[in-house]
Amino acid sequence: MSALLRTSVAHPRRVGEHRNERFRERARPTATRRARLVAETRTVERIALEQVLAGLASDHEAGQAPGAGVCKACATVVGTTSAGIMFKIGDQHYGSLGSSDARSAVIEELQFTLGEGPCVDAYSSGRPVAEPDLMNPSTPRWPAFSQAVLESGIRAVFAFPLRLGAIRLGALDLQCELAGDLDVDQRKAALVVADLVTNALLDLQAAVPGGRLAPEFADAETLRAEIHQASGMISALLDISIADALVRLRARAYAEDRPIRDVAHDVVTRRLRIE
Image 1 (spheres, rainbow, N blue to C red):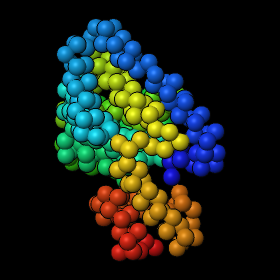
Image 2 (image 1 turned 30 degrees about the vertical axis):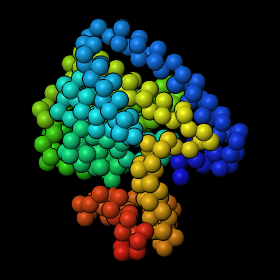
Image 3 (image 1 turned 180 degrees about the horizontal axis):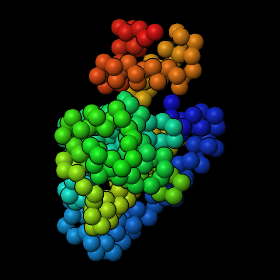
């Protein structure tokens, strides 16, 4: 259960209404912010921003949260090989909202399964995270994640938090086949598209009453619920904490080279017993 849902259960009307009012206050001038971004961003061509907005529109028409359409546009605008969006609220990591291609989807799944990677760090710190060369990093980090990403053919990864003030919704993930840092214009472009995606997510959530997640996030909520249920079952069976149970679930997924969602499903359906 998400942090939003937990608080609304405790105080269903007062807390839920207060939380969603915060979202509405933040999201209300969205159109104005977008217009300002388009007008004031001189280093990113207007046509590039229009691509991101078109991607958002295509995802919306498909009844989806910002996903494949906007991720492809983000990669094009910034000039990277691929892109993905990690969705997270509070301590609840819901996985990926979308990715520009199959390889990016695998990278997003790795971060969710392993609990490490650039998006996880960008969300936690509230700052952009860059690793221009996973093969020769200045500071070694994400050992399991880095090796798997290198094997997929990606050499550099970058993440930008999706946040507005105290509200944090995840991170934008950018990947490159070639080693090397983003240049100044690419960094500015990445900040712009991250702001656009943040606004889009706020728009969706602001329209939902009662502290619930927007319908467009339903798949992510279902995934998180199943993993939470599997962790609870392992916790009860082994008499350990939920956190320790999740660690065991991640370890099993990593050892079997499987997505954590698949392992969790097997636990919930009692086809797998984790000792």
